[in-house]
Image (cartoon, rainbow, N blue to C red; front, top):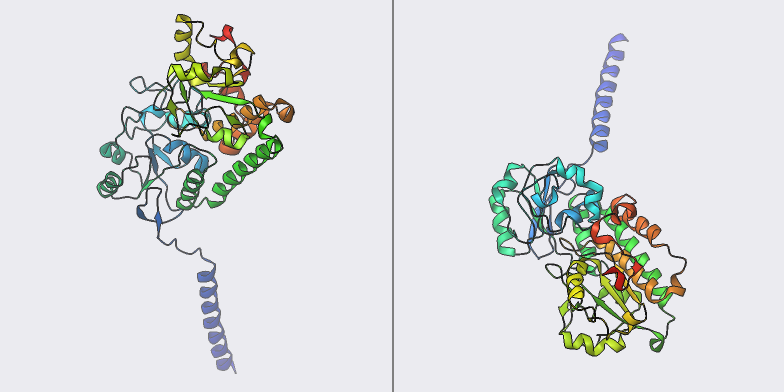
Length: 383
């Protein structure tokens, strides 16, 4: 009897061990599998989603976009332009509010250099990147051959972004989704996209009932175009106007995108400009021109009637997408004050920066020199 019991016990133990092993295997996390993704310039790159622990971002806008998805987590190096504690570095954007710097500038300052960066240094520095020992590179250098060569040289994935300049367009959304895929943060990417789409929908809904013949004609100027500009730099198809339901005084121009117009054209359309929006980045260039000739805006109806407004500079080291969204609200509020009288721009800016970067930062943004006067009406005394 004892022998039989021992045999049954042995069989039971074997079954138990086998069962326990099967449970352990089934409950253990599945090993991450590699997949091939198509980056924003059409390159096929093999990655293991969510596996990366050391990241560098290179090129204008790459670090900003990364922080929307991952904050400063996992970064092991930044370009010199992103580290404001360095003396010998590009400083052309230091007077402009860059929300991702407000949020994570201290973290950037603690990291080693992965290259110089900046508009005048549009090249990947492989040796400096390697010195940071990354396991993936997020890049905004949009040349296929150079990106392939860099990836081969580094021996790690190089994911190239190309978000475009519009916060409302598909390239921006697709870029976020790509980053979400790479870092296993798909939900985070979709949250930002849903927020932007909801904001755009609310703005458009508020202005949808305005008849075309009741819309003021608006002129946007001072838009960045690889550097600061002046009152002659504009856009006949400004994306922010389109979402805000605003009538662009230059919508009949055949060419699109940011472009400079002749002084004579500016004077000619002056009587048609009901409202003028100036981007804050251009103020430093407009002020000396106005000092030389205080009559430069005299042909502009909006200037004479006190309908000139200053928006925050949103294009500095590529597009600050959260500021572009906030500017859209400001433009709509300036053009249609009755429809947006309930909107407080400080509160709206805080809401937007928190959605993008996890922090309310309007107070910090308006403290920057270039932001002075922004989200307000300006006149001759400003210049």
